[in-house]
Length: 128
Picture 1 (cartoon, helix red, strand yellow):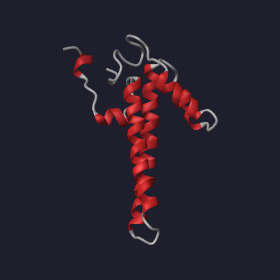
Picture 2 (spheres, helix red, strand yellow; picture 1 turned 90 degrees about the vertical axis):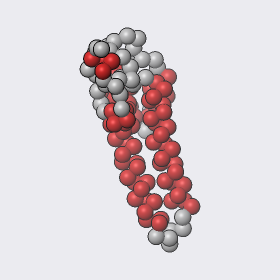
Picture 3 (spheres, one colour; picture 1 turned 90 degrees about the horizontal axis):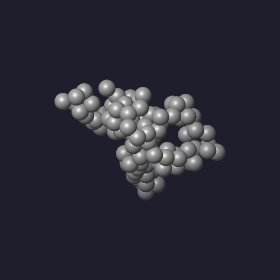
């Protein structure tokens, strides 16, 4: 077995790793996962009355998920940029309000590099 075959991706690498490449579908699924969790926590905040003690709990859950999802989304986008063979400083596009929506669409639609590039041999794997 070669080194590329031995290095299997796992969920820790998927959500919080920064090396390697990530193709369009896993990138979209990662973003959808975090949006689903944020939506669920926000829905609980809106349903629970403010006087209920669980309102504070769900508020903290929402803030915690927001922080973790922001870090994870940045790392997912770094790996997506690696797959597209683009420089990582383009991640700034996600933080500019006027272009962030369009940048996300580009990251979801733009195909990755065919074959190996400087960030890894295969997409959806950590770098050797």
